[in-house]
Length: 244
Image 1 (cartoon, rainbow, N blue to C red):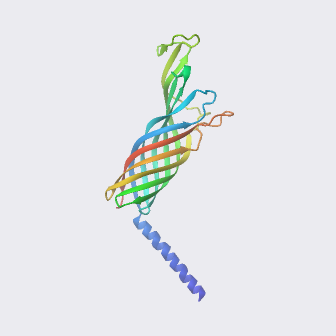
Image 2: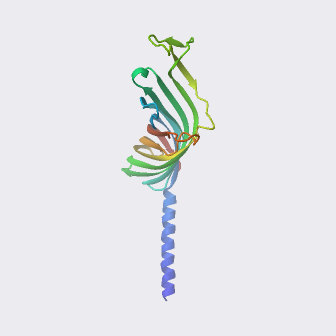
Image 3: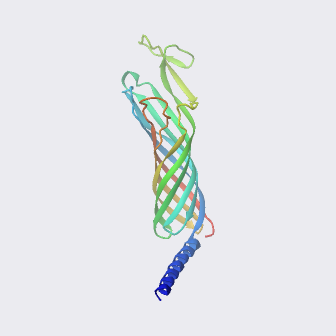
């Protein structure tokens, strides 16, 4: 008798789980979209021996293709293929304040995250939390540096005995396989609002933060100073739902 009751309870529990899964699958749906926006990146590092060097944030842009699988009206999983610019500006003070180095680094990032949403039928808020993997695609820099010999791209600096000219550069930076770490991984959080225009079309805006957990450099020397990217993204986009 107890065995029958136990089997009956197990059957009820199994049926309940099955019904919940059917309900989830009936409401679940895919969506794909397009997003773009502005990035604000800062470099976390130490100036080292250059005590008067200061790193300033630099702006850029981002564009990506998000794919989302919605389980319920409050929970979904998302993945993206996103191009993100992560630059910085290095400047010095005092006698060397004319020198600067503006660096623009381009990354391909793949965030994977959970989305929790709340609110009404059309206007809703949401929070994203997860991580990302990425690859360092390219790097460009422009700025000025002192040099001892002048050329056609240099301008004279008067009153100096050892350093005569300042050189302007604008160039693509070639990667060094012994030094540069082109793999990036980190954590990601975001918050935003969405508005459903029609049954299968949604627009949204989001503020997102990428926190890199990997050094931009390989362990190629002793007592090296690590360098990490910290990036805010302010973006807007549109999502198209299937089967809605």
